[in-house]
Each structure stands twice: as structure tokens, then as C-alpha cells.
Amino acid sequence: MMNINQMIKLTGVVTACVIISACSADFDSPVGDKASSSGSADFSNFVAIGDSLTAGYADAALYLSGQENSFPAVLAAQFAKAGGGSFTQPLVSDNLGGMLIGGTPTLDNRLVLDAETESPAPIAGTPTTEAIGSGLNGTAFNNMGVPGAKSFHAGAAGYGNPAGLPAAANPYFVRFAKDQATSSMIGDAAAQAPSFYVMWIGNNDVLSYATSGGVVDAVCKPISAPSACDPNAITDPTEFAGVYASLTGAFTTTNPAVQGMLVNIPDVSTIPYFTTVPYNPVPLDQATADTLNAAYLDYNNAVAAILGATDPDQVARRTITFTAGQNALVIMDETLDDLTGIDPALLSMRQATAEDLILLPASAYIGTEDPNSAGTTPPLDKPWGVGTPLADSDVLIPSEISAIDTARAAFNATIEAAADADPNLIFFDAAAIMTELNANGIDYGTGFIDATYATGGAFSLDGVHPTARGYAVIANEMIDVINAGFGASILKVDPGTKTTIFFK
Image (tube, rainbow, N blue to C red; front, side, top):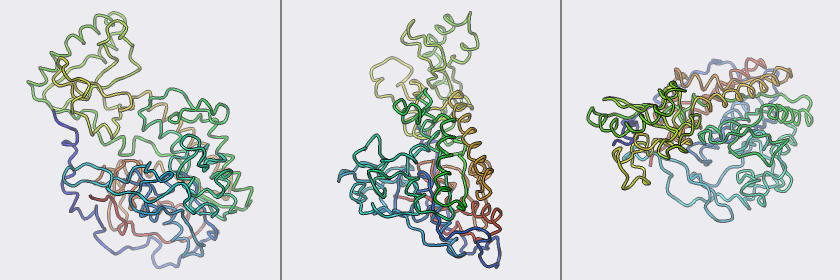
């Protein structure tokens, strides 16, 4: 049986000009030769607050080069050409990306692509970035991006307290919280009384649910019921709205004239983590298809006998059949009736459809043998996705996607309404940019990027976070909105000078 990695080939990536570096060093600024100007905006004290996307996280880690190419760092460099002030970031110690907590390696190194196996793997080396005793505490930083942070974490006092690790504190914030015991992200950010801020928070309020495969049913109410909050649950939209108002309000309190940009939440179905693995990646010849059909005959007949008279639609959904050619994966679906009380072999499984999203990590083992199936009867060797169904955590099914979409729409309505309500704030539609990258790609003048995993140039090897080039494109799109909103003429950068994925 074929592993999905044999189907998602990355041949030619090593030498592709668009992946490694720009094919042209020339870049024509969209504002031409016009001098850079801030218009009515005040960039003298620029602060960014958010999660991993703000921090410059990429390739499943926070590493030095990623931070240096974060979208806030790109913006700050361009703002400086129009009178903007200095911009400091809590830079990590190396380009490995792992992290030590009390001297113990705890977080994995960043991903690089092995050109021989055509698979991503952590880069070798012992990290030197320490979460505790970093020497950064007590200092104010302009980039307040904290990987893993949700909206309600931003206002949580002690989120940077090492005594709260691993559950109540975040090691990334432990590194640079101004006062580890009492600081909150928004407190440290707003205390700087910024003249201009960008806030991109809320991604993890749905993303952690999505990347876990939607295995949690409960919605988290972080304010009214914090003890009941599962780390992977979706944040309650009403409580999100209250939290978000408190975050924008904190900036206004320290500087009533503060200006800024609020950024919305992208659709998970537009990023490679959820779009790379097709629902039907299983190639079969007729003989293998016949063998599988024979192996599933008893299952299909039993389901039909139990449900045929009462729920023929469910019988049709649960009937598993294979043909010569490409075939859909077999997946678990908890919305199906539980028949295991009648027969433990009658799992709640079906074949995937185009409406299901298969998570990227499943590509590592689809088609390989389930190690728990040794010595069992057919079908075949019980390969994942064929003889053994993919687990709930490997797939987003339509009901889970709907829950994500409903919450995200509410979050985005809150964010846009907050921008509309304050004449000093503008709104940036990051969701539209991600949709464009996924649907058509973006031509940035000296090159082109899209959302194709590994070869598209926009996304790093974790399938969620942009590459340096992707972050530069996002920064340029933000500059367009800032120029329009504040009558500015901030110059853009050439994304073609930025890196994309890295090789072993």
C-alpha cells in the first residue's frame, strides 16, 4: 500500500528559483518615486500584539530569522522611512527554533525539508533559547506576539509567570513578560502608550480546535467558566466580543488618540494544513479493490440489516466500496449512530467526501500499516485510511467545519465593528488575502506565491504559518490599507528578497 508522501511529490523544489530566492532583484514600488510619507498616521511608537502570526513563527517554531522577518518588523522598517520610531522584538537566541525550560529542551526545533525523503523533519541541534532567566524581563518590546495565545490570554495577568507552566502560563511570554508575576500581554503593550498599533488576535480561538481535528465538543467560556475551558475548545463568541473590547479599550485608555489596524481571522479551509491531503488519495488496481470490497462485505451487510429500515441515508453514507483508480479514505465520524453496542466491529466509519478536510499530519501515515492490527484478519494489512479508519483527530468533518465557520464569522464581525466604531482604527481583511492565496495566488511584481504546500512559497512547512516571503506579502497588503486609510505613502518591500522554505 502506498504512503501519501509518495503521492504528494516535491520534485524540483531544490532548484526552483521561485522557492529559494527571487528571480529578479528589481522591484518597482507601487507608489513609484514618491517620497515615503506617514500622512495623518503617527508611527513614532508602533506596537504589534497578537499570536504566532505576529511573532513571526514559521516552520512549527519561533526562530531568529522568522522573527526578523515578521510582518510587524517589515512594517516597522517601512514606517521608519516615514518618521517611524525604533522597533524592538524579544529575539530568540538561535535559528534552531527549539526552546529550553529550566535547561531542559521542551519545544521542538523548526522544520526543514529533507530533499531525499521529500518530507519535513526538525532540524538537528540543541537549542539555546531559554524561557526562564532569558534576561529579557523588565524590558518593553514593540512586538508583543506570543505563539499559542488566544484572545483571552492577552489580558491574563501572570501569563508569563514561570510558576504557572505548563498550564496557566506560556513559555514564549515567560521569556519577555516585563513583570513575570503580574504582567499581561495587553498590559505590557498598552503601558507603552503606542501612537499606532496592529492587533491580530483570535486565530487560536478557532485554530486550536481545528488543528486538533475538532475532538472537543464544548465551547470555552474563558470569562464565566475558565475552569471548564479545554485548551482546544472554540472560544464562546459572546465572551470573545467582551474580551476584544477590553483589549482595544486598554490602548485607548493609555492614549486616547491612538491609531491602529485590527486584523480578522482567516478561514482554516484556505491554508495548506487543511487543503494539502485530498479526500481520495488511495490509488487501487481492480484486484486490490475487489479484495477490499470482499473484506468489507460483512460490515456493509450488518449496517444495512440494522439501519436499512429506519435510516437508509445513513446506510448509504456508511457503505464502504472501492473501485480501480483513486479512492476516498475511510474515516471515523462521531455523528454516525454508535452501533458498537450491537457489534464491536461496527465502527462509526465512512468514506471521506470533498466536504471533509484531512489534516496535514495524517499524510505521514496514510497507507501505512496500523501497528495495532498485527495478526488480524483482512482487509489486507490494515493500512490507515483503508483497512483502519483515520481517527477523529485526523479529519474535520462538516459539522466541525460549520462550528469553526460560525464562531469565526462572529469573531470577524466583532473585529470589523470595533474598527468601524473608532475613526482612528482601520480594518484589515486577512481572511480575504488567505482566500486569494489559496484560490489564485498573488503576483507581487517580481514573482508569484500561492498556498500550495512547500512549493507555493507562501506557507512554511507547518502548513499554517507564512514564510518570510509570505509575511512580506501580508505586510505589503497591510501597507495598501494603511496608505488608503491615513492618506500615507508608505513604501512596500520586495517579497522576492525574502526566503521561503529551508532544506536539510
